[in-house]
Length: 399
Image 1 (cartoon, rainbow, N blue to C red):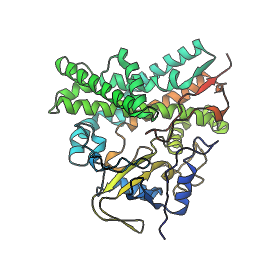
Image 2: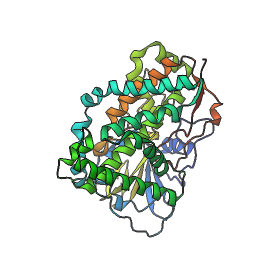
Image 3: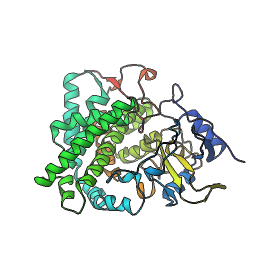
Image 4: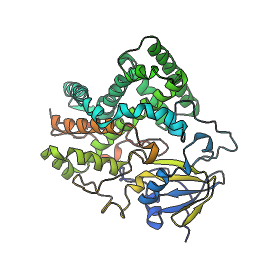
């Protein structure tokens, strides 16, 4: 029997900041795949079950091409023409264009290379903990800790001057945070584009010891390098910043799990994987069927837009027993927090290093760390944001 979801949820359920919206959980309980009528009348699909989400993400018959994304889950844009992704912005491309940009990067984001960055991540983390301690005993964990660590690391990796880091944080917040109007969003996007164009030209003229300079010694054009840098900067900053802050929030709201992590530092790798599964800050992706595809007993017609729900897939009880419980000792890994298939997150190993360093260091430095306001007063990012998280996280501790 065909199940239909009529609207995409606008907010999470009160008192459940870490759970997917109730409507999505209920949709998955009804069926791992549901019909979804888009606001413009397009009859698309919503996929919420783990196995089907994984299948869609791995299937080349489902396209990521920007120019095919004509239907928005919550807004009727009418008959606007969607242009192809700009050169270098490979997340919105299929093969073979996608590989032209991803292939030169793969060897630079290996597990070994990212682990070599551990010492630098530890230095950056310790410096921000020192600053928090000196200014405390209270702080907004988002601005004092969660944002600056990944921002500094990704900027250093790409060769962005330190003094420009604040500009990137502000502009990326605007075009990924889901809270500014169209004009301000476009201005932020163009501001970053213009800056990156100048940065690429500077690296080509005077290469330094960084990833962007290395890439200038290839057949990639300046326009392509600009697009690649935009993807790496935004993905390398925003997702990890929100995972650090939301991860700390989740641990503070699960004191038994927090105590377990403090008592046993060897839990950290499994704890990070469980937090990634439990929180799934990159909530949804969209794909478009290039041909008729059989999926979960339904025929997805060519041209149909499919929404894949990562956060409900990672809470699927058929894949994860007791899925709504945060369990740092969970053994059933294999989550989809970094997506799957050819678009699986390129920087996932860097994100893991940052999370494995930042969260235990925070908890060790401040044994009495706690929320400074009731949990229900913590301001959450809207569901419209590409990446879920908290806008601020007021914390305090005993001096």
